[in-house]
Amino acid sequence: MSLKWAALALAFSLPLSAQAHRMWMLPSATVMSGADPWVTVDAAVSNDLFYFEHFPLQLNNLSVTAPDGAAAKAENQSTGRYRSTFDVHLTQTGTYKMAVVNNGVFASYKENGKNKRWRGTAEKFAQEVPADAQDLRVTQSNSRLETFVTVGKPTETVLKPTGVGLELAPITHPNDLFAKEEASFRLLLDGKPAAGIEVSIVPGGIRYRDQLHEMKTRTDADGKFTVTWPEPGMYWLEAETKDDKTTFDKAKERRSTYIATFEVLPE
Image (cartoon, helix red, strand yellow):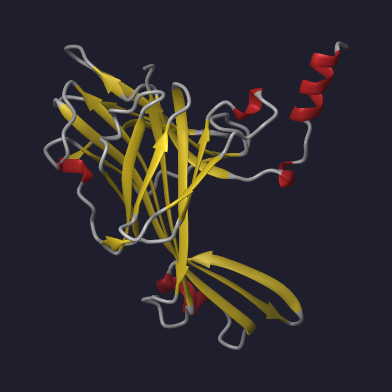
């Protein structure tokens, strides 16, 4: 076996626990044209971007928004061992948004001396977590996972924030990104500028390189941050923040996460 293949074999055999799990959606393209365009989107939770090797992303809370703001249909949905997939028939000119928004509750506690963990909705908490649970710690969470696809000319209707949780308010359109050019975005938390939040940006293809090539930046007082894309390709972006603004009285902490996939085109 050559050194190259020995190195690859070692890299591919690393324990999963040594790497981070990342949620993502990967559209087959983000800028499209033609008389009858479709897009196929893969969705998964994995260690390597954008490679299927851990768990399919659940599509229960998937929504597709058309350029006019109306709901569009996610067709041919399927979930397999490692990935989920769906198609969207792009019948309008403009920008579509695909989003998976999850709201839930995490709890850790002890029962009869044993450590327990629970995940579910606030409605099921009282039914499934013992009332006398010891060392109970409850965290409310909301996460938003998005990607954008444009047919013809980019539009901005789907970019309007909802005012709930951590969201991206693009300054540079997310389907107008080019290598070596600077792009600007703003993060909002409950509709207000999210200041001082670390943003992580990782190019795809981790499986085929030794270094993560992660880029980190931080939002300013107005929630703004910029990134200069080093080369063309698909990029994964994540930001997370914690506070005590819970709406579930059992939770003392709220965790808000925003994740997106962007395609950067050649300069």
